[in-house]
Image (cartoon, rainbow, N blue to C red; front, side, top):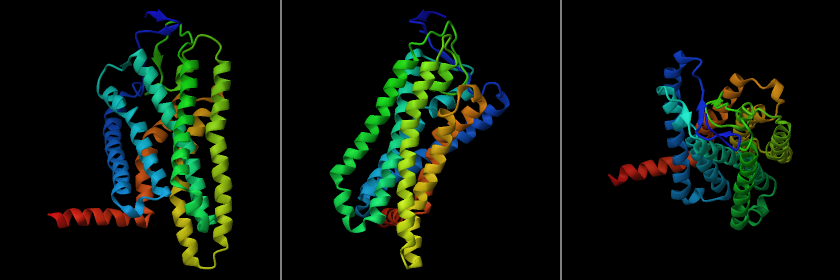
Length: 312
């Protein structure tokens, strides 16, 4: 294997789930179904937010951003995984690995920040209802969404620049189904303490800080909702937040497991499972969670479908 700046210049082998060949066909079918549902569900959310004037609010602006993120995030890993599950060739080019790491890590970081922004939106809607339209001005919404993308891809740029120059000493087999930082650091034949420290520190900033803001926001939301005397009003308020809390729990739980644990405790098999969850399962269930628990989205779907039937 040729070496270039200490890295594999001809590419890598993604081992994925090749140690369990009997599961590859089952995984292929399940992941293909999940991927198709992810595309359909998230594309539907984006389309509804554009077509229905009632959904052109800050909440659905951020939800559309989340759906677009999930579409791109899943597409950055799943199509290649599906090909690898049905062929003997598990290779990925060096440039392909760089691009995949940069894009997937950037989108994942962006989602972390965006979920925090969405919690602030719910806080403003419930705790400051009279000032909501002033606080969540379209310009501020666009600025917060842009900041989420910027922070996510700034982190991705840093991690990519730090990871790929590491000397691998001929090692090119990545024990993962896509190019991810912890798996790539395992290949390095030098001390990676600095890289792991930077990864942990940035992980705290990207994961824990937004999670802390989400926790504070929902603490205040719960306090405000409990002051509502009407039980119907309480149910409505909790209903608007329940979907977001569910999504946050699913995404942050698995991402924190993958990125914020000591390397000596890192299990590669468990790492693959957690990565499968936050790159494939969570993007698929997000539209389902928001649709089933949201009367506005369900109403918009009925309007669009009824309009389509009437036009026939």
